[in-house]
Image 1 (cartoon, each protein chain N blue to C red):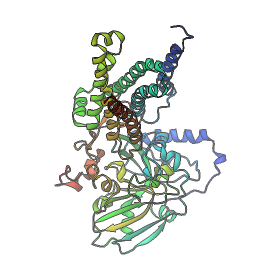
Image 2: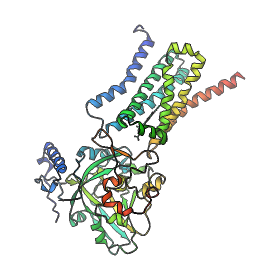
Image 3: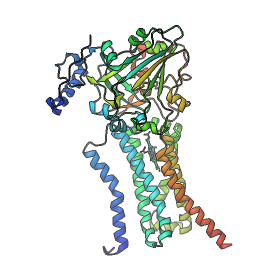
Length: 307
Length: 201
Ligand code: HEM
């Protein structure tokens, strides 16, 4: 059972304390020790999770970088916009509807969801389509657990994820940079894969708004934009979803968007990446280093055609 | 070069203003305020100031024509050379910090990435302009030839805007602003020429 601890007023915790805690966390993550083994310090947002063998032992990118440099076009197209404009987003109450080709459609309350499925800490590599990467300690549970619970019908071939549409709270949606709301999708076997995560936390705490609170997808072998944020709807379909980027620029972004150093973006190379915090670029790995686990999903497919 | 000469003062002022972005960048770097991705920051910073430099350089002539203040022409060369300076920083950032002298990757990039190709051509075209920005060179070339050579700056500015336009992922607001400004600056010249042409007939 995952346990949520009662809030301790933040006045009881000094900034420094939190900071040291995070430093310690980073160090421990690097050693493969999960936050569950650390002494409880508890803020309102502290989450508990079990260690996962799917975690990488690579050094996690700093908390500050992870929470201040990312793409989240709902809040603007600059990478500092999410941290600037997302904090005011209201993430409670929040519901996620499960619909489409399932026997048990339902509407989940976010807290019920967090309390139902045991949380794990998964430290994953994240590769952005723009050529930079991070290592991020997520907390979440396998999407497969939720899918099992929903009992998909035989017609369910794809899963579609929809992000909140609320221009009043999401200033980026007031401009038609993309066709809102943001829609992403996975093939059923991708969605069921044990690496595919529904994340509700980061660095031992609930997700910061700029990273996709209250719940987001994390598919570590695909470019970052596949991992939809602030999800309000998960729909099972027999048709391949028309995803936001693929609809907007079909020549540059495909449905699959697996990390692939051999298939360049039409306008830039994907062979290398800059790991945030490192000076030199490193080589990008097929499927972002998860080839052993996921390459089988695409056996026999022409990855140049299905980019 | 007396300090009480208004033109000298103007030149000093422009020199200080034009050097300010670099000073700012250095201060940010010393204070580790270049963000999570410093190389990207520097690339964007120097690229932006190159483009701004081009626009400012192209503003001098219209401004002189509008105000009748002939001495403005004397800051044009300085602005142009500063533009070349920022373009060089931008180019060096790319060669050194971004690609780390990986010649193979650079050649491939220039050849395969339209936005790099265009930026590269723009930079190559800036070189002869920078080299010929001295009184001695103007004399050697003859003012007329010098002038037609320096018309290349129109092409460079257009390539600069295209470079920016092609590199953004989706949000083209910024490149659009530069395109708008450039249209005004070049449109002004076209209209004046046409007027002059009709008057002379
Ligand atoms: C006159 C010449 C040039 C001008 C006016 C120019 C201008 C710019 C501008 C305005 C930006 C975008 C800044 C931003 O996003 O805030 C940029 C980015 C960039 N430029 Fe240039 N540039 C020039 C030449 C070059 C050259 C010669 C190269 C390399 C061979 C180059 C490589 C790049 C790269 C790699 C980026 C960043 C792209 C990205 O982040 O995706 N540029 N440049």
